[in-house]
Length: 215
Ligand SMILES: [Zn+2]
Image (cartoon, rainbow, N blue to C red):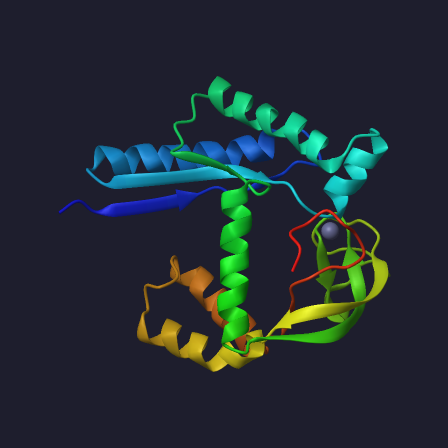
């Protein structure tokens, strides 16, 4: 019986060209995939591009292109880069592909049918670059993003939320019962202490821009 091994890079945002950081994570994944293959594993190595969101919409607008035209011009830059570096991936996914959109809709429907999605209102500090809301206690330098350092915007919008808080205890329980679920253990401890601070429900929709998968 062959053993399966799955590895993925982050999927890269197409608001700019691939850079040394994208090369670093992709080469690391490629090395790991080749090693596992040499050990007889059946390897699936995924990479791809993350093509939705406000900063992609803005990057397209700046060049007077539609977001689709912009992402269509950007994805090959990544593909060419991995070719130049002889990256031996199994599949390259673009989030504008129908197969990705179908998977997202299926997952959301499953979660919705379980009663874990509700409509609420979100007001918070938003980083356009990272496409994430930043909690008050993580804001740095007055009004800046802790991850990328850029200035935050105050955003208030109606939003769908995933009831992540509901799963806090189940997650802790699972991690405790399966000590090797997160490796290395130093990372496991980080995750556990993050969860113990309390999981917030997660805003999973945006209505301040158009370029996304409609819910
Ligand atoms: Zn940021």
